Image (cartoon, rainbow, N blue to C red; front, side, top):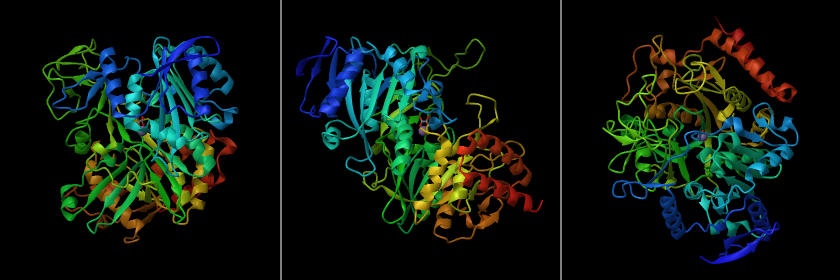
Length: 614
Ligand code: OXD
Ligand code: MN
């Protein structure tokens, strides 16, 4: 390594490798300032090469940050374990730091930039002592695309560098694209001492900066993902008139070879990754349907010169939940994670492969659990409950191109044209299997009032409804009232507006059993959605929007019990009137900042429900 001695203003020194990449004064100045604060032992600029990946992997294996898995069975795969208190996004420690609290809105934790920098500086001071500070240039979106944004993450975690390499375009080509004065998001991360009481995830939209300290969990530290591509990007999107959304993007190829694309926002535990990688059910596959995965988590969407909405997935990889992944729920995901994957917090089997709850294989007689302790299937906790081998939020980081259904349009600079936007929720009652908004503004109201019932797997009271507008509650970097206004404006800019739909795969019968089989069968509903976009089938008007005529849903190879489809599509007037009261309470927290159009939609829905026959 080419080592040069550099000296900071306080007289401290560190070693830095200076490959030909270091060429921009504005980048160097910022790196120097951050290094002076964090005091790393050396600085390494990442070029994104395979040699670098091999070197960093070897280092992570030496330090124990990674464990090598069986390279014959899982080539290129490694296991990482996080600290036990660092296994998920820390929403309560995540802040939007704007000069005015109103700009962050009631949906975000807020701190003034002054307080936030002061608190964080105390935590970052000397936090990288004895460690390398990596400089990771990355692009979200194809390099050179009008969609793309560049960030540079400084981190003291080798795990972060190796994950960023999977999740984003990374290295020298990005710095080349940045140019000598290029704007980039300044991302600073240190594991520091991984102490939850000294953890902060801070977003500075006014400075285009992100500071994250005290965590090693992906959602808190892979700063290109939730922090940049959603929280900071949502602010940039409002300013620059585009949309940064928590949505999957899916292409549906019909038997005639025509591909249409949809973007869908579903809150967690509603099957987003499964829908993104959906395998057509046998009946539809035989007819010639195919699915193309463009993205599973984030969509950036712009109005193009043709007046349509075009979308890219700014990421390069999947950061998916592992438990429950098997050949029935998501065969494509299983293939995706069979090579070049970093697993986090899953169980290790004696043969050097991994296992998790919901795996195809039966539980191993013995294994090492996600915390590195011996595990066997009969193990119980002091309350007598089975001990899990893998953390419920254990993750895989896997390259996008590993997915058998990955779209050939993935690298295209302009992305894919979106025909339909789908909002989804988990509701045992109330929301029909699918319904279509009356128009764009009504669709924005449907997205803004999205809500899901908590499952046993989630925190909080079972069945309690949590409102999660557009699945963006934890990710919108500004006041959601303004965000709804931005969605309304975007509709006015579109000459060809995508139609907007709402789906609910989780409606249950009187015995609490799911009425709809879900998974691959959901393609039947997406097909109806696309038929509506092509104006091939009429919708049945109801007060809440259009529902399908059951005969327009292709049921080849699927038989539902008698009466199930009617129950799935029913609109219960009294349930909806009660829902309106809850929506009113939710809207009121935004005060006068909420666009009038939202109240107009709300009142119009009430009138339609009141006028409907009892
Ligand atoms: C994710 C999330 O990790 O939404 O994608 O939490
Ligand atoms: Mn997500």
